[in-house]
Image (tube, rainbow, N blue to C red):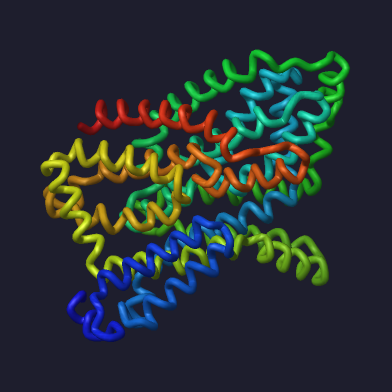
Length: 445
């Protein structure tokens, strides 16, 4: 493919260098956050085709439609389910389960966020939990920062546990053929340990010092969680459909179904049930609202990113890097795994973990022949997932959920400074990756 590509690149330039330059410039502009990342990814994708690195037919082959379908389907499911009020109910219930004690709420909201993030994408989870957290912290008259910081960590840690919890896992699972069950079996055990350790660290850092008045705690306990439920019929429908979708993910392999099919079918069924109960005018409004809630910026960012990364793969850079990495690790699978784990963690704290993982997947695939084939490199996928997802906690730009929380906090008068966050978060992230290192060494190497 490289030789074929070379003849079409402008002025006969080397396709490897051309595609690498496009990738580097695309990533640099994305990191600058001066222009919407979806726009930049799509421009980078267009340039890959226009300059001749590959044609449009080849570019389309690089788009992982399973990832696109899974993300879109889950976004629709969450959008419809959210209108029932179930997530707001869960947040208030969590606060009251801790008897409105600030430290107890800090712990339970972390666990709630982690569990939700295992089944919803991280950005959606924090969008649901953070506004309620702000209201609870205001009522308790305690600083909101510790709660928001803890929820960022919990969302990224909890999302690591399953196929659908974090976009990097969706990418890995879809492009490598790993199932929902594979992620649960291999990653959930270590994530439980990491979550417990992080909760203890956050409690020692902030929880012990959180204090509130008896009157403020009584105000939280007086909240009626049941009032958060706005549509009981929709709640029942959403719970049934979400349960069936989760069962579908678990049984995907014996059913010979892809996650995207399950998610999209579930989304369509829930929209049908939601609109069945309403007159045509209300139904039309709900449909427009649901599709409006889909994060199209994220969807088109993925589309452009897939094409850009595929262009680099076609140009030959990833194959070259894979051979260099194998040589650097002496052909030792464990050394390669540890290198991927720590490099993924550090780099994912510096760049958004989604484009990083999208670049690493074909690189690791190209390493397979050196280690005896695709069946022998599965531990490397778990190292990539753990490194990228946990590493996303290291800085504010490490994962989309981090910036989402920071944005909501700033709009509500809670300062969320990059340096302050990093001084707390980066050492804690290193602890979680160290735990993951011990785990993969013990289990796989």
